[in-house]
Image: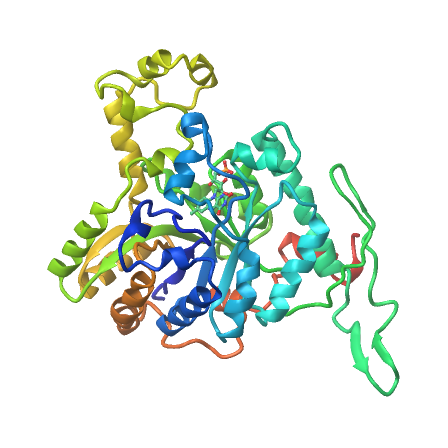
Length: 455
Ligand SMILES: Cc1cc2nc3c(=O)[nH]c(=O)nc-3n(C[C@H](O)[C@H](O)[C@H](O)COP(=O)(O)O)c2cc1C
């Protein structure tokens, strides 16, 4: 069967998400990110274009490792200022009928009970069109914003996430039976006692009594998105996630990640096609190849070369050293023996090689610049040869990126049978991606709490 593309528009409520410097283009709309009209317009454009979902990234701290300060991020609008993505979804849901929304929320800092209610609220308001990108938060500043002296160690964050999501499953799946709400005006009965229960969770990190405060929504559990690269992250993803973002570097990492997660999820009783793999992709399209290339070159003139260093929390100043000394020498010159001891940086590379590698890594391996036919050819190769199921489309320009994709690429992909012709009315996000029911299948760990079992 011809594989069809899952396509999300990658967004964040901030001027500079991942295409650093591009907000400076004179007609780019990104500085309107705090205006509800921006999100209303974007949602309509993306739905007209046929996107499956708008996917909203989020961080709950500022980038302050590079130069030991958040000033470089602040100057560039690099993910600061930013707004809460969950609150934007209600506005976008009100002006759309079909498009889904993926929102990022961290399991590390806020306890699960309130989040269970917020997400259930969004599943109701979107009529089952919402997904959750599960993150454990990588920024040291985020930890300090939530009362901690420093970051919780990486693998401990995933242990907390495992209990966090277990509490959510209990609330979303176990607390209310399907027939709990009768809303019978004559009998004066809204919900039936005996069909709604406390969860009485008493774990290592959380104590939650319940009941869940929201009545069951269509999906109950939002579509579970996750991006992981580590052993702990992959084990978590294999058990829980439905849609995975996979890093595509270094070479071979994508294939290894897909295989590792699929194999592990099957070992855990799930099916190979219960997980879908998305990559971040750049598509610069125009009616002709020459126009597309010219547009890409123009975008490149706005590119901010320091943005990736800030975003990747590079703990030294690559641009302030001769390019032919090694990373180790540069760190020694800055007295950063702590960074050398911590490992993780390619100390043997020259500073120039390191800077080039960061710059190259910033352009995903999934990058195409061309006319609609060339773009569709590339996307078909990504689907068939690279083994991915979909893309998160990186925005170089708001709203041209979404509009161009809709006007030029979608019709070509539809002609080739690589995208559906139209949305199916009333479909939930889970049904759109997996084609089965609105709820997680019985073989998913969330299902074990249904009907109040195993609480
Ligand atoms: C495409 C993509 C998007 C991501 N979006 C976010 C995000 O919005 N917020 C966040 O805190 N982390 C985000 N991450 C980081 C991941 O959640 C994860 O921490 C990272 O891939 C490293 O994997 P690990 O946690 O297994 O070490 C993203 C990662 C990728 C690849």
